Image 1: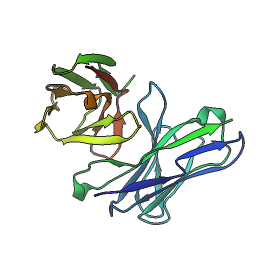
Image 2: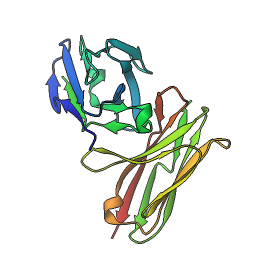
Image 3: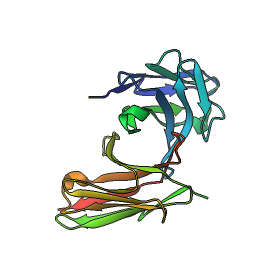
Image 4: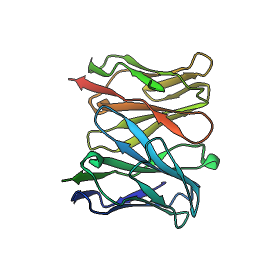
Length: 113
Length: 108
């Protein structure tokens, strides 16, 4: 069974602090994604990557950085967390050879105070 | 405007009845995926579709790329079908655009 694991699952951060959300996949997938979910907005793409050491901007990249040090790992970095970044964050992976199906992690709930 | 519009936004169903959810696309969608977000918040992949139809148990989905829409039919709704259903469309560049979801409640 494909697996995407996120950490931490829940975090409270202070405004202006640095937050790192981590994602690890054992699917051997090329593509990895970070999505943000807010009530009433569905999921919106922040950053994605199709190869290690390279990241691409999604639809809402402002205030976020991403890092893909290896095929298995993809991090989302909030250098200066703000109240508006309170949300649930989902990591996902996919691969053209596996039919492009998105496999999601369990989500990371971030509260910025 | 929204690239993917889902309807209805919320729905209540009596257990054992049928319903259909719909997504309309304002982008040139090449593939569509349907997900169920369960009450715990987990996103479960239901279908991955190129133009055509797929069926899995009580669920059936169709995607018409020319008319830019997709549907998800639920037959004989059960309590465990409750949750929020999302569709996501890809234009061929591995960037999946999500709708805002349909919140489904199945009533005993």
